[in-house]
Image (cartoon, rainbow, N blue to C red; front, side, top):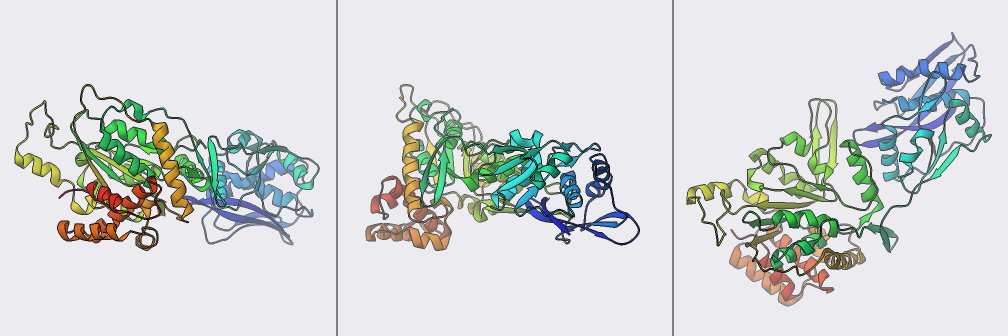
Length: 502
């Protein structure tokens, strides 16, 4: 019996599959078992034709191919090559341990690419189980983007057989290095880019908002900006992605895995995603869904990056309330009849809103046309439980005509990198904005004066338990930006000044 490795997608993740073939006495037949889908059952004719045209003669025996484990559904024509090799190499002693095999077969034995090969290999690499794979030669250009993996490209079934027997070396391609700069902390490497296509130098004035944006980026803290139209809310939001912390290899792979599911081309540049759905977008398009199979949505595509909601109160009530789960648990579960998929949603949430329906409530130039009832209804579209999950709130005034740029993205990014190094140097697996209660107690060490300030704030403002945790996390990031090992009084005061007023 010959065993080869392949894989199938189960929801988002790839599951390794053992392809086993046996020849037993009985009437000549060819069967595939192991919950094989219709695309795999059809492969019997492709495999049989490819083997016959490449010099293989079928013995008068019963051939059974098993796809193990047998308790998961499998689909995809990429199993063709593994099934054919399992049959052709039945009597050969060839070392195939740890080598995955993928490719669709033509009737003449040509090995072809399929859409599912790249996401499967990317998922296997993300799980740390992929080091070497035999793939179609036409797939090599795309697959070379996956780092730290050896791919052996073949054009035909006969070439794949020769490769397995050691009679041919195939076309080897080492994965391309990740673009951008890299540094290591402990045993982990992190990549970042110094390309700033949209620079904070272009944001004139708004010093308080830029300071809040720096704190938000350094710790991945959710932020809400309120101000009149044209004051720079969207400009700041769009520039945040270029100063975000570096990405680990796992984050880069995971981002591209989700991007592929969203129909985007893979790019292994260390640039975190930026998603900005319109306020008229439907709930399934934002959170994922579908009638039968769960499709990926904007909150998952933003994982590891920025999710920007402009005109925040104009999103539907169902979308706003459903947003609480991914903001709190950093995941969203989509359940359907045929599938149940869990997406990661650890993103930096950025929201922007006007102070009133007409937008001129804070304007010193234009009069506000809204009455008190309209303003109250506008504000009430955002519930307190939702707003309680946003750590930073900043009010933006209209920029003065003679305002000058004060800081650029290069300087802000340098400070974010230094704060990131402090967080990882403490042994944090997650950045400050995503710490859970246990990690808050472990890493948010406060000086006595800071503890006194926080206690007075709890008594004066009635901070909730989540509000106290948010203040500690923001203060921890401010301390990191100052290079301080502990949270001081000034750090806590600034953190409390950034909280939302009731």
